[in-house]
Image (tube, rainbow, N blue to C red; front, side):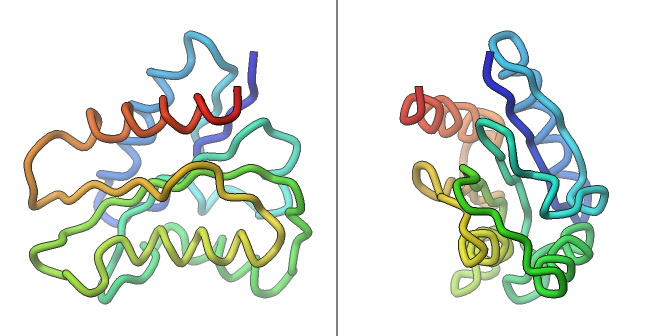
Length: 150
């Protein structure tokens, strides 16, 4: 049974709900923990088989409010995340913010990769102004990510 940590960064609660949906989907076969990025120090994400980041974007493609303390700790403490496998899923509004769509989750991924984390799979994205449910998009995405590491 793999240990999977799902971290979410949210402004309005959508990323939290999606993270919980992913946790429910994965908990049958994996040991899953779902936590707000606000409540996690970057050095504490190591030692898991996979860390999944689910984050919305805020403003002009910035990480959401609940991710800001986590990002500040990365910048301040420079944790060594070498070998930590991450997968990243972003929520955004492509119609309203075409140039910064998915920027919040991308900035979190970039910060983690600069500290040695390894991105598994493609950066998943869901356009809240498009068709389809975020849960359906994210579940198909996470199943594909897990298929790459098992």
